[in-house]
Image (cartoon, rainbow over all chains, first blue to last red; front, side, top):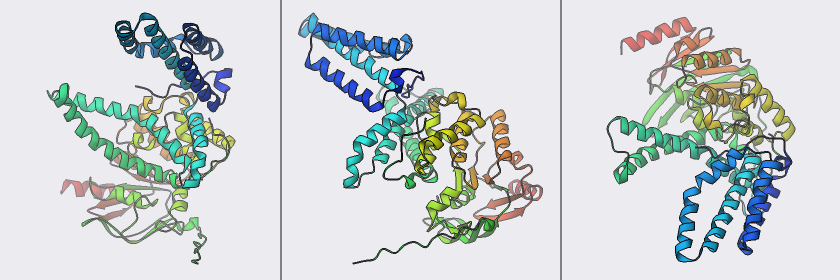
Length: 215
Length: 242
């Protein structure tokens, strides 16, 4: 499992500021929902694919992987619409979601996490006046991206250990026997991580960071 | 109106090394260290002891992660209780489990984390990160997700993330416990090549070859303190008779 999908390339999209890319993503979302017509939605989808393959020089496999990840959701949505509304609405809904999923993948693949986090920190900077440290919000986002795959791996290890001893890893019983040891491990990990943050100077974080981030 | 009292400017004296004066530590009722009086000035110092002997607490005292219940720990003359930020800038800490130390999703971002905290300008950060990743064979992984690295690479990244901050001293808490033989040798070589003072807590007695001084910690006290040959013999004897 990976949430860090940055694909290094020397492209104009990679060089574009994270804020601009996130704003474009937000703008595209508004557009395909505000103007739900087939030409607009199909145009948005084609545009996203072209930007991805030509301007950002991303591999087609990345788009295919992202589309495959949501394939069954899209199929289910289409079938539901076909039964409840009509085929055109179903197609619009599916294409709209696909365009947004792929656009989000393009933003993720062309933007370093630090750049995205720096943007979030800038957006949150007015919160300084009520005592919130934007750097802490950025750190929380970065740590979530870092630790979700790690915790997923640890859950897999617990399930394997239980399966190796003949335990059930399916159903409600499997869930409870996984969740409790996982929770214990996560709490232990959280304690050590908090020590590591202290050791690496987390308390030294200035209220405003100086200049753009390093690579 | 209350006047804010300024903390006195720290008087840093690197020649003093790390001093523990009457140090003890307890978690609630459980005493894990008692009456430790030491001065650590040697370049390479090892700490060995059985599980639960108090050696990890000892290590954590050295950069203020744990504050002594009794006594004082001074690093270059700085008190870990009152000048902890400055102490942590001077004493880096490498944890046993690198997964707990790596807090950013990608390799280069994590290596840069401590420098960001110190407010190092972006250009210098990028330069220092590139240099340290190159030194530890991680340059080709700079943009890779940290969790996809091998165990040895993760430990090297954890070390790189500390070294990039250029601390004067580094404490390692069982740095090779989770590693295979090849990576254990690699980390041992990294430690050997460091110019800084290093304090290594370990169960791996081979790691202590060539060290200047080894402490054996047992039941919260320093049981033996001397050159590796003497201390390791005392430690083996202690474990055999347990």
